Image (cartoon, rainbow, N blue to C red; front, side, top):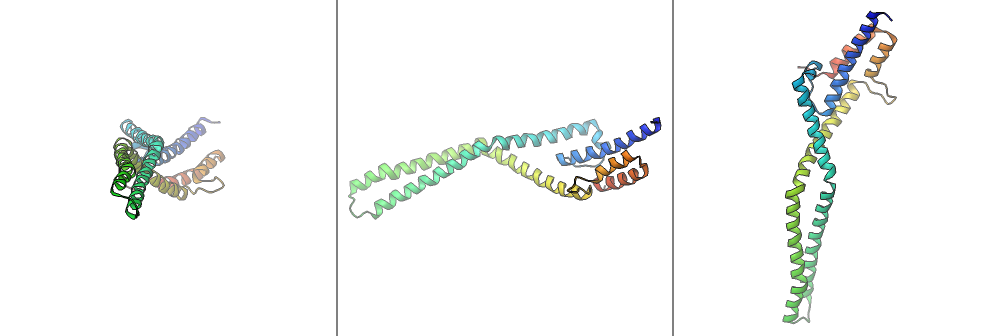
Length: 201
């Protein structure tokens, strides 16, 4: 293969590489402007920090399943304690035979115990919220936001890259033009795809 063809092939591959980097960074959560900006060392570090921050939030959400389960279990316990308190008070109020001492004993054994269980659970819920749940919630909001943005980008890329169910896409077509040696077709398709992917200034 002549040296010029090798140079042309590598130039074409470099253009495909630029587009691939743009797409990868965009889906990772980085706002795009141009391949040249992404190649700057200072911005590359910022890009990696953004991606690392997203990964950290995802890990917090993943590790947060058990504290969330505990939170809802405690919440259920609080409701159960209040149900027990209500039931014990109703029993005493509706009783036609209990004497004063018996009413007090029932309150001491059942109503007061249910109230104490409720209070203990409320305290545990607050502590769990302050130590774990707030951080998990914050990370969940960030992850949900990233998911929403990513889904919007997926829809956009499906349209912009002409992605089909048979796995064809305009990005794949660029490689087909390259493999067929159709330089003019490649240039035209690459220019069109780049204009669709890069946002206008």
